[in-house]
Length: 488
Image (cartoon, rainbow, N blue to C red; front, side, top):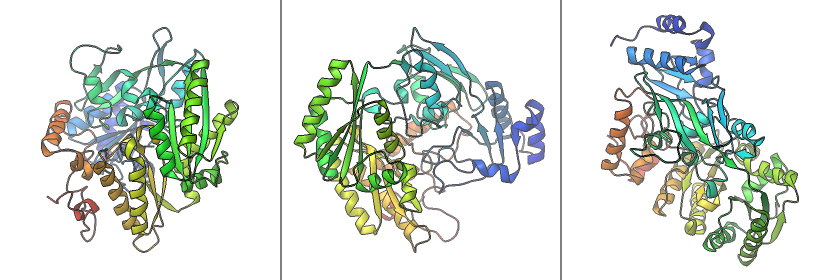
């Protein structure tokens, strides 16, 4: 290995393999890549490279290998856990120019795409053949397949159809030493270790995705969508439990509390009732007769739980308007607060009412507001902690409240993340769920793929730099104050 040369020498070496306009070294241009959707964590990289092919990715990774430089692969930057935050002394490999759909196999329901293809582009390309790609995060219009694979993204319809991991059949991957490998053989299941499964959800710590073969599903014959009003989240939570307990599996079941409804209506005007204490957006699909019967059972369960209003979408236009309201929820929070933190935890459905009540109590204790909008059907909460960063101590209270909410999810038998990933945001919360032995096993797997540790370092696993150590006077992390983690 050679010592890392200066930036001009690195630029010269890269441009000898790529085109000059693919290599960015201007500090102003590099600011574009200093963070993902979690803007509270930032670092300006040494360089950014706009890759256009698998060969480009290999060239950059080989340079990083030769000079012992860390690297981070990045798509659209819509992640919410800091997973795409660069290393200050490393390289960002930008994949958004890798936008080709390589193949579409209609007969077998498969499509092979490069990592910069957006989630929505996959379904649009498949729609002409009566097919669709099931995972649909709220950022579907802009988030990329490479990022979906990194975070194992879900979305509103994961209740019935599952997460990205259920829809990836094969991956083309560049490992940390520049080796190009194929993981998976394009089949639903195959013998041997599931290396494809290791990679999906690994948050870029095992290598760089350069292509993915995804599974496409036949579009359902019929879809019914209903918006149901409730006096509050407790009643809405009881309805969710009743529907699932009755053996009904809607394709989607989303909840918004009154604060979230207010924000969405200001932003989109989707037709949500501002008088409701909470609303459920429920969708069922299948054959025409199946949909009709399932919808009737859902409505009966909601009425029994205390529903105060029911609105079934009359047509595709009204259905699209309802979903526009739900998918605008995160961005709409800017209508209510200058700053907010988006959290992501999972709880058992049977604990919805209890945990929502605890979140309310924690918010009152912190003197802050929390808007709840989430995938109620599978218990994946997305509490949004609203605060004003210019207010005295509000940012610190918001961070502490956000951490307390995650701890509450774990106490209820849940998880620290459902689909946003760990990244840097929740690395310090990993010991809430996993023992030291568990974490060592994970690190062993990571080391098998990336022995040098250059792939997206500083993510997922707790380190002193992440767990409370910041520039200036030491401030303990909220989880440290709670006695959950220690400083080492």
